[in-house]
Image (cartoon, rainbow, N blue to C red):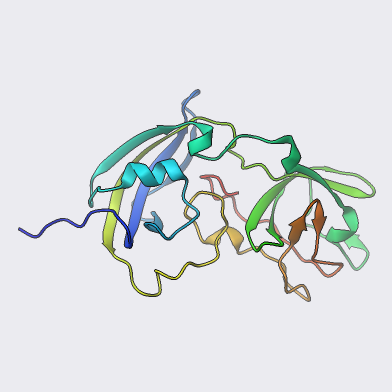
Length: 212
């Protein structure tokens, strides 16, 4: 009988799960078996630490359930992650781009090259106030899931791909980066965006598991 591949260093892992607010029981996100999240164990940086530990040594079709406090999942909420940016950052041809509206989630990039998402809280005549806390920050969460696939990672998969850093395992979180003449992404550092007047940052679909 062929030995089942186990989750461990250098393994490509596909996993399906439901993510709940442990306090209220609210379903926050679901990655289904036909569209699972994926990672390379020990290489991918975007998966929450507690979830990585829960999947170690599991094999295909094995189930897992783990409850994680904020520090092992999406972190605490911090007031300093709510920042006020100059409105001109989001202007194009003298007008605020359509995507910038209260409640919108906009992909931004730090000067260190990390893709992050911020939620627009307020728009004033001169400024845009955004919250860069993870949407699930401060929550104790529960993952109920199943391993869909385990195999050796390919050489290409062992080379990290820049991802959203949202803790969810999705690469698509950063697809809504700047376009047009802005080739830097929307850069945020110490409350400032480095895109310039030609920034065309657009909101991206919520990762669900925390992307955003």
